[in-house]
Length: 363
Image (cartoon, rainbow, N blue to C red; front, top):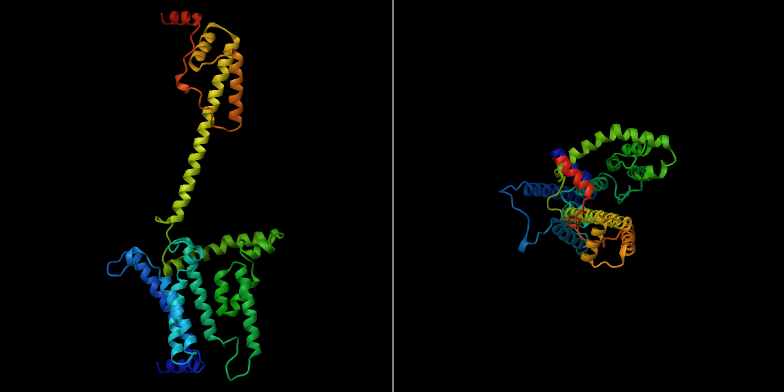
């Protein structure tokens, strides 16, 4: 214990890093606490207090985080960064960072995606913030410059090359290698040299004209990265909880479902309308052909239709109307429903020869 305290005094207090250390402590503590809290609320544990809902309004914890950020940031300027206030305000600022970044996905999407797949971006943002703060804590601030000592240009060069390698690794789609490479320089260099992931911006820019390299990247994605993604998903579920596969009360899901239902209904209505129009046009063509061909049955049918619909003008008028219906169907309109319903057409009279033949068969 004494050795640990001596190390703290030597590497943290004497190096003027105590405010940054307290900021990191507040960052990690607030994130762990709020994740534990929301998981207890999600599990509906009775002994844990629920959400803050004054007057029925649900207040997200990023609102409290913004308050901590304002108090911490303004307090440092108001006290001119003097001790011990800078330590207190550094702790408050770290608490605010943890609360706000835990709901980073809500701010990014402007929607309540906390327990959705998009909510994983909040965990990425928190881990990135923790790693960056830890890098500043264990390194020299800023970039090898320590008050009262000369600048170490070699260390500045190493940190700069490591930062460039970390950026290249992130562009290649290797998020965790790039983030962890901030703390471990060799890891980011390896990620920058190896092949990029097929869905990364680097692959879209560089592998479009290199089919062999793209094929190698796809093969590596199938073999290695799927296992790594499963391990990362398991770790995220352990830290932040498993997301909802289909959120029951997600407003975006409701909007998508309503749009899909509306499109399906409109498609079915249009299909039924076109089918009815085609059927009516075919019936009209048959009546017109029967009227032109003549015969007692066809004439009786045509006369009946003329009486019912007030048709006057003979076969020529009916043929013109049939052509108009066909043009309407081909144009995709749905206004040919003035035709009488298909189930109410009078059945054409049978020919006398068929009637006689039918009676003989029954006998």
